[in-house]
Image (tube, rainbow, N blue to C red):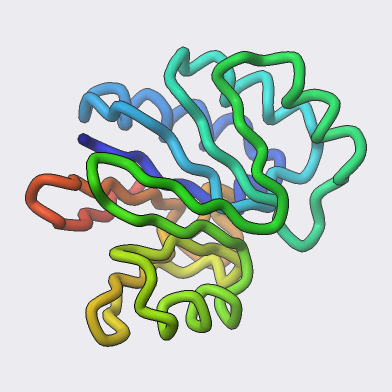
Length: 161
């Protein structure tokens, strides 16, 4: 299974559109957003990918309006502050803040933990758990980026937008 991972879109629908186009070219099967959509209109763009999309809240997301917006789309699942997913026999956790991501990785309960917030892509390992930040869609701190995780090869690859 090929999983696309994005974070920190911060209303940059133009970069999000470019990222989605590249992810479709890479034949992703599922998309994960690690939070900080900002305005709920970003959800419309995520839903248009026509694949399952799993999202968590970032630290600046509107919880009320975003939840109502996500409820309108059958392919969007908004998990709240944290998601626990079982995809292709991989145990996956998703959160926004790095300190929570590191704590989740330290439990040893997950094969991989995805997070955002820092706007910088990163792939490290805590014991047996991969810890991955896809970078930012926004483009505030540098080149916008996203990541792809292949559950078969267990490899993470970063792509600039």
